[in-house]
Image (tube, rainbow, N blue to C red; front, side):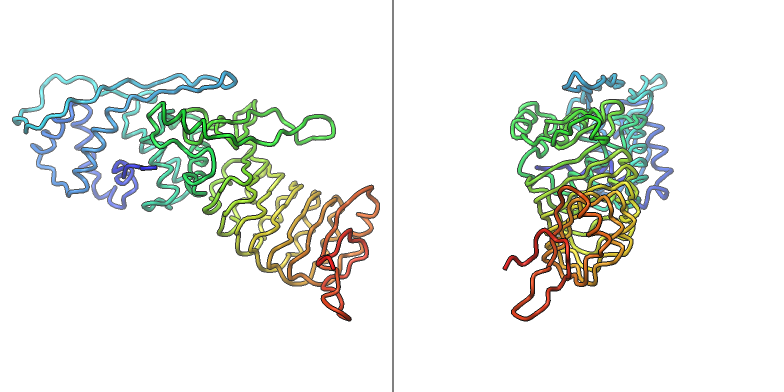
Length: 432
């Protein structure tokens, strides 16, 4: 996929923004009264504004691309409300190879077209940039996922979200997720090669068969909420709730679930996911995702289900994660995690499912594991952990009709004791 180097974003994020403020103000003053590209370039020249090569490219690219965009909002599902378009179609200027003759600014000038309830294109870009900075800070260098997401949102997303849209931040965060996890190389549901070509979009959707796991309702499942499950390729010009692997709550259209299994999801986990406050299920299984688990995930207040197994995650389990007391599934097996299991594990009293097997976690199994009285499945095998399974956990498990508990409780060799003593394990590793 090819992305243009957006000089609009370069300008908005440059450290010279304040230094060039006067030049920018002069440009906007002229631009408010002129909507012809060649005429505006001429007035800039007549005003003797000195620009380096990159700035000249910026003005040219902004005027030719930004002013000629005719955005549309076109949700493709009947289950989602319609966002009314607020844009004015602006036809592109006719190209010319001749240098125009200098002329004074006319005394009577046409009004400059606006979008998003009265914003100019540049004002829209500035406000969306501030929204992005609110989530990502100043991590906006070239080729970063954050920068790529912002460029897409401002210049290539034909859904044309406005800064005052309550879901503008959500759309930006999901775009960051896409670029951060190497979305262009997913097995399915990658973005179209050409964001503005209907055939390219249709082809991307045809190559998208990812489905989210149905959550059955009923009295025995308090986590059930009616949701909308997406089926379209990512970054297509529809509501982000329509993208495959996403489920949004019907009532609020806030993201409830991100789910991919064996879809080639790679890259790293973006910390911006913390700003999806209604996210309850984050399921990214059997990919190549590397890096560390962001400590910021602890700020997802409604998080119930964190499943990141069979990836290439490194580092330790963030201490902050043990503060997510409503978490009922923590599935981190078969990664490259290190460090020890914190005694704070006992604070996750709602855990039903805990898998840490197949990691390089070391140290003694903390006694606080005995506080996990709701646990039904525990998997601690094939790690460097030693010690004993607390009797309190065994007592709790043995009181349940069925449970699974696996540790390294087989002898390490003839006449050698096991790494882990366990009186209630259902299976011991290795299976001798």
